[in-house]
Picture (cartoon, rainbow, N blue to C red):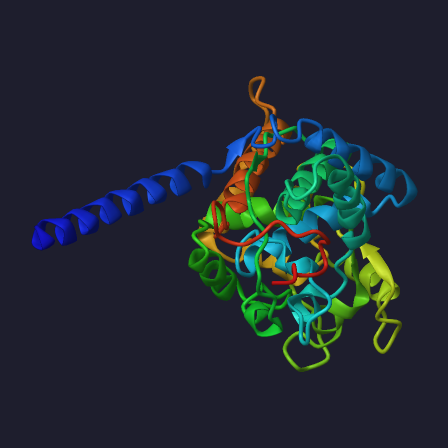
Length: 334
């Protein structure tokens, strides 16, 4: 009887574990409308905050879009980029220089905590805000899967493998491949630079010392180089901001692809996309002559939405992993 009881208990325990894992897996799936029952106004609250912020600060859509990418590329889409109350927090990494939009994410969180306490994660707010930012800038709407939980780790050293503006195309491809992205994903996600600005801080090597001989990147169109150098002169103010897309900085479109092909890319990493046969072909695929009714801009916008959904799935924490923070810039007290 003792033998039977011991085995019976072990069997029951095994069944409970399997059941528990199944329930956890079920509850841990990202899906569109994750908050439809527990916080049905979640997406509209975030959208309103983003819209109001963008009216005050025209650069906000680009800032929120970039924030999502930087969050996801380090430890996955878990809101770790938002933490600022720990020593050597991730957001202080060199690769995250110039990030913004933190206050807007917290504003949305504060409103959500009032209506739905401890329900909506900061990671999901970042993902939703990025989508709303794209739409406000004139890009196509795409559905955002939600159900992410916030991470419990924020470490500056984890951001060491962020793509760098001066990386070669080989290094860029490898960094994206490590995260499960293809060459096409690399090009499309770089297309986010169709809106927003960058700082002269990221331009010295490209404009003034590309090969160590006081020269400029030869891929820059000769007609464009004087303009860039006048905005970011040697030993000038590194905080001066310049448009990433000189022709349509505030409009989400495929102009960035034209810029890359024609030598009008502003930052070096965008220009490098034309150095490789595969990424060059992707860029060119959005620039085909419109023989029929093909709308290349719409094609780019559609593909961008798909790439953002893929980005949003990167190393997410769901189910019982992570937490739902009460305040986005601080871990919950254990």
